[in-house]
Every structure is written in structure tokens, then in C-alpha cells.
Image (tube, rainbow over all chains, first blue to last red; front, top):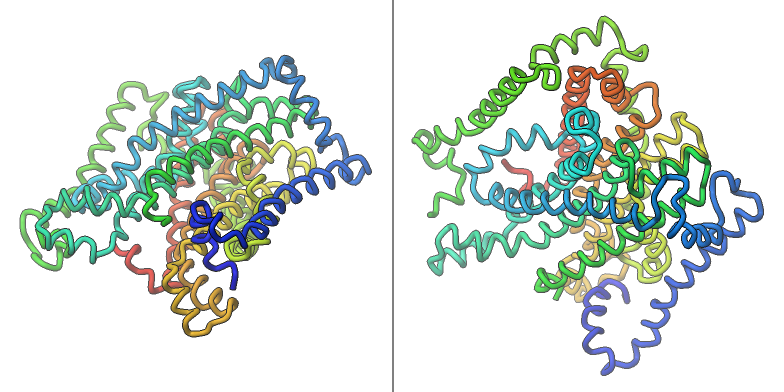
Amino acid sequence: MKSQVDKKKTTESKKGNKAIGKTSSGDLKYALLPVITILLFLFVWQLLVMGGVLPDRIIAKPTDVFVTMFRKMTDTSPDGATLFENIFVSLQVSLLGLLIAIAIGVPLGLLMGWYPSIDRLVRPLFELIRPIPPIAWIPLTILWIGIGVRARAMIIFFAAFVPCVINSYTGIKSTSVVHINVAKTFGATNFKTFLKVGIPSAMPMAFAGMRIALGNSWSTLIAAELLAANAGLGYMIMMGRQFVRPDIIILGMITIGLLGYILTRIFARIEDIVVRWRTL
Amino acid sequence: MEEQLVPQAEKEPISIKWVLNKILPFVSIAAFILLWLYASSVNSRLVPTPAMAWSRLLELFSTPVGNENLFGHIWASLKRVFTALAAATVLGITIGVLIGWNKAFRATVGTLFEILRPIPPLAWLPVIIMGFGIGEFPKVLIVFIGAFMPIVINSYTGIRLVEPLHIDVAKSFNANNRQILFEVAIPSSLPAIFAGIRNATSGAWMTVLAAEMIAAKVGLGFLIQRGMDYFDIPLILVGMLTIGIVGAMLAVLTGWIERLIIPWNQKLNQD
């Protein structure tokens, strides 16, 4: 019985926690559990590698990765760039592709969902591009543009564009008919209903789409960098594999994961602000 | 204004608007083809004409690439995707629902999932190749990782976005936690879960290509990679088109299954 409304409870507890008082011990338990889980995970991992269950040619110890992290901040081997240089290159490429995709994809999806004629005009082309995974563009992009920042940004654009369109479209399509009718009853024009009713009620879905886009662009970035790059975190991992440096590979994976996480958190904060009415 | 909400075709069978709506899809397709033809007339080595791609497609059957014709490559990729998807669906829904429903589970497994989740499936590739080689299993494993994540995320989100009113109603009728989960929460989150499966399918299709492009001797990803290595752009186009068509068919297939299992969610499937 305790869990089904806990989402509401957590949002409420931010405001009214002090007054209730009784839930704080439970909150503390659930605040500690994740920390314990992570520590246990790292501990078991360390033990497995040290005990030889996992071969250290493939998996590096957490402590080794930790040491490598500090060394890599100044050391450029084996891929010719420090950690921060790689991070900068990867962030630059993925954010560029992502932002262009959001700027084009979300409005397009909203318009397609609301206006049937725009839907009819754009849909054939969209359906043509949509099923082609961004990674399949890599060979063509390399031969056409090369392996520079623009080429990788273009691949990421394709990755992020499709979920932005689809989710905005689905979101605005599932606008409550009652709300639309209310707007019409009060004499709103179709365009005004689109702006004041359609877009706001599509926002939760649109943001879910952007979240998917963010994830896609990150994972595509890695593919793009594994296949077509001379710098970046994916390239660093690839070099780690070629030089049999599991610590570099795992450091790369963790960095990618961490950056992805930070980006998601930043995004979630934005989402909370923009679609606050949905969660309350 | 009213007719905007009713499908045009039903209300006024033949009018200028209706005709325009019928023509619009062809306008964009025609514009696209004209653009393509124009580009290939400028540089046919970089942008081959549709005819060149077509003859390359026929050639693919007479002289197979990598000992397989086109269907062999399609089947090789599909087999990997289906195996991984089946495993990911079963495990992903279970874990996603548990994370969404149970607080302790969210604090433990959910945390680990949150840690691993931001790591893109393809970033596992080097480790998996080092650990398992470049055989069939490592590729399926990569695809599994790629398909697993969206299913878990959507099941979890679906459970958490269940209308609180519905849960309250169930509680008023003295439903226990288990009944609320299986009869209210899961059914109402099925649309979200299926959205996750749809994402997983396209994700799996993408991941398999990447895995094949990096290390494989058969499959569509291998095909386009070969096209790049040999500067054979018609082959890349054939590969991309095939990838697109098979991917679209996969999406249609998921749509059918979705309609079969959650027919009440038809609103989103119209049009």
C-alpha cells in the first residue's frame, strides 16, 4: 500500500516534510539505500577482479580506473588528447546536433500533429528518413563530408530529430478533446487552440521525446566516434581497445555515462520547470 | 472551424481541399526525387542516380558480397535483433514495473540501472569484444543492452504516470496493492510500455548495424561498411534503403502486435 502514491508523496514531501516528521526516518532509509548499493557494487567488482574471477586484461579494477582518471587529465596517451580535451570535443559535437534537432524537430512534430495538411506534406519524407537509423548514415556522411565535427553533428542530428518529431506529434494528437472543446466554446480560433491547449498538453510527451533524443544523440555520438573520428571519448575508448588498456576503456565508459547523467539532470531540471503542472 | 477536428474525407468527399490533401504527399516525394536527380547530374560519383542504385541491387544477387546475397544479410541482422528483443522485452518490462512500483527496488536496482543507463550500449562494444570476441553472442548482447534500456525506462515512467484518481478508486474499492498493480497500474501503463518497445525495436535495429559495422562478416551493417571501404556509394544506398525498409517493417510489426494487445489505445494509431 505504501508505494503507489509515493510519487505524489515525494513531490509533496519537499514542501511539507517538516510538518509530518514521521516519514523522515523512511526517507532517510531510502536516501541511504542507493549509496549502499553503489558501494557494494564497487566493492564486489574490485573483489572479482582481484580474485581473478574477471580477467584484468578485460576489466580494470575500480581503483585502477580511479588512478587513471587523474593521470589522464594531463597524460595524452594512448589517443593523443587529455580527458578534458576529449570531453570538450564530444560535448561540442553532440550538443550541436541535438540543439539543431530540437529546434527543427519539435515544432515540426507539433505542426504535423495539429494541421493535417502539413502532416500530409511532410509525412512521406519523414517516413522515408525515419526508419533509416542514424548509424546507417555514417558511411555516406564520411564519403560526403569527411570525419570532421560537422559530419558527426549531422549524424547526431538524424539520431535526435526523429524522436523529437514523433513524440511531439503523439503528444499533440493525444490532447484531450474536452480541453479542445472548451477552448472552442470560448471562441478560440484553431491557431489559438493550438497555441494555448495543444502545445501545453503536448509538452510532457515532447519533453520525453527530447529526453530520448538526448540519449540517442549520446549513444550515436559514441558510434560516430568509434567509426569516424580522430578525437573524443568514443575515439578514446576505441584506442583503449587497440592498445589493450581496459582502464582507459572503463574510464571512457564512466565519463560518457557521467556526462550523459549530468546532461539528463540538467534536462530534467528544465523539464520540471517547463511542465511543472503535469507533476503536481 | 469545426471541420478541422472531423476527418476531412468523411465530411466532404470531394472539394478542393480534399483534392489538395490527396496530392500533398506526392508533391513532397516529387520534389525529393527531382532534387536527387539534380544532385546526381552534378556529381554522379558522389550521388548516384536511382538507376545506378537499382542495377547495383540486381548485381548484389548475381555476385554476392561476403558469400551472402541481400536476403542472407537481412536475415543475419534480423536474427540478432529478434533474439535480443525477446529477451529485452521480458526482462525490461519486469524490471521497469518493479522499479516504478516498489520503493526499495527503486532504491537498489533502480540505482544500479540509473548508473549503467547513461552508458550508451555501443560504449560496451570494446569491452564486450575484448571479453567475448566477435562471434554471434557478443553482438546479440550489445543489441540486448540497446533494447533493454528504453523498455525499462518506459515501463517505469508508465507506472509512475498512472492517473492517481484511478488508483484512489481502486483503493476505495478495497483493492490490495497487488490488485492495484495488475489491474490498474500495468494496464494503464501499457501504452507507455509499448512506446518503449517501439523505441527498443528501432534502437535494436540501430545497434545491430553499429555492431556489424565495427566487427562482422555478414549483415546489413557490414554491407554498408563494405560500400564505404570500396567507395561503392550505390551499394551504400542499397544498404540504407534495405535497412530503412526492414526497419519500417519491424515498426509495422510492432504496431500490429500493439493493436492486438492494447486495442483500447487506438486513438494514437489512427491516421
